Image (tube, rainbow, N blue to C red; front, side):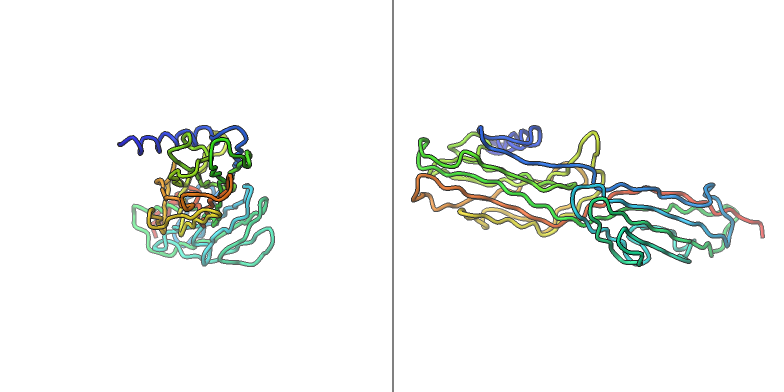
Amino acid sequence: MDTRELGISILFLVVLTSGCIGPSGQTTQKSSGKAITIEGPTVRPSSHEIYPDSTIRVSMGVKNTGEMNGTLMVGDQGKQILTNYCPDIFRIQSYNAESSKTTDNKNSYFLKPGWEASFSWELKQYSDVSIMGQECGLEFQAPFNYSVSAYRQLQIKKSPQAGGDPYLSSKTSSGPLSIQLETFGSSADAGAPVFLEGDDIEMLARFSKRSSKESPYRGLIDIYDPQFSSENIDIVRDSCEIPDRIIMYQGDSQIIRCELDYGGSISSPSIRAQISAQADYQYTKDAGTRTVEVKYSGN
C-alpha cells in the first residue's frame, strides 16, 4: 500500500471512529436507531408436528421502529416475507395481510415510523409422506426499501488569511445505511474541509452499515444507482468509477474516489462549495426459520 492509499485508509478509520473530523466550527450531524422490529414468526400447532393432510397456521408481524419512512416489500401471497414454505410439501390455502393504514392484501406496504404490518398464512400439507416423515424449514425475512442522502460543505480560500464561513457542516440521513463523504487535498489536514487556491482536491465516499451495541443492523443491504452531485465545484466524472450496484453484508463498501475541479483559481477571497450523494437501497432483515415435521401416519 503506498503512502496515499495509507492516508485514505487512516482518514476513514478516523471518520468511522469519531464520526466527525475537521477544524473547530465544523459540525457533523448523524442519527441512528432501530429500523425494523419483527414479532414472531409463530407456527401453530406449537409442537410443529403434524400428520399428512393437516394444516399449519403461520404468522409474523413487522413494525417500522426507525426514524424514516420505508416500503416493506411483500410480494404475491407474501412470498417475499415467507420466502420458503416447501411448495413440494405445502400449498398456500389462505393468506391475509394488513397494515396500520389498510386491511387490503398488497404486494408492498408504505410504513411510516411506528406503523406496522401483519401477515398470516394457512399451509396445507398435500404430498405423500414416506415412512421417514418429512421436514420443512420455513424461512422468513423483512425487505425494506429506503433512500439515503448525505452532503458535505467545503471552503476554498485565496490565502490562509482570507475570510469565509467558519461553520461548515455535513450530514447523512437516518436509517440502516449512512454515506461518509470526505474531502482530501495537499494544503489541508486529513479530512479538513478548508483548502487553499491551487490545491488539488479529491472527494472520498463510502457507504457504511450502521451498527451499535443497542441496535445492530443485521441483514443484507443492496444499493443501486448511487448518484453524486455538487455545487460551486465540479466532480470530474472521468476520474472515478461509480458502480451501478453495491451489495453489503456488513461493515463498509469500497471507497469511491473522485477528483474535484473548481478551475484552479477563485475570483473572491473564498468560496463555499458542497458535494452531495443519494442512493436508493433495500435492507433485508433475516427473520429466521421455523422447522415443521410431517410425521408418517401409517395409512
